[in-house]
Image (cartoon, rainbow, N blue to C red; front, side, top):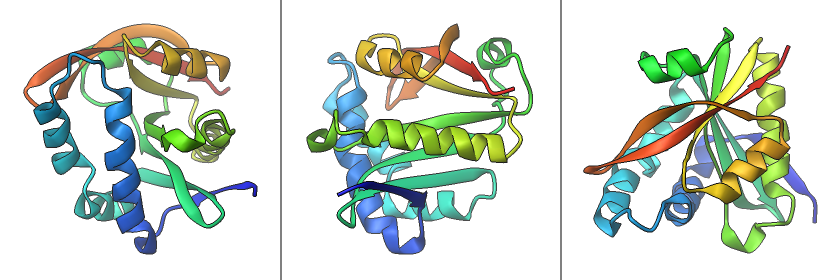
Length: 177
């Protein structure tokens, strides 16, 4: 009944998209409309999009399994986007972004998120990253506490387009070297 974390494969696409569609709304603040959530999922978390992510050499998708069932996932993106706010907030290079880290609600508190984060940090270190960064909604205090527990510190802010809406995120950074 342990948690296994490994790189996602083509065979995982259907389950991965299902987990993403189930978990993404849980991290959204109450002010986000269902239409904006649905638009984001359709545009970014479909089976076809995950197929593209798996083929992208600048991305790593990890899946967490318990009893051979995908119960969570994380996505790493190598680098820092051309966003001035993120450029200022992420001091060290090379950098890797933890773009997504989500776990099914019935597995919250069971160590899945921690296992995914450990695997993500190990992967970033293997890639030679000097730091790891992520964006987290400023209203999502539970996620902020989790990231702080894993050594991340708020180092700036950025905006995030969610459908037709704009959300405000903290940029949190953890140095690896």
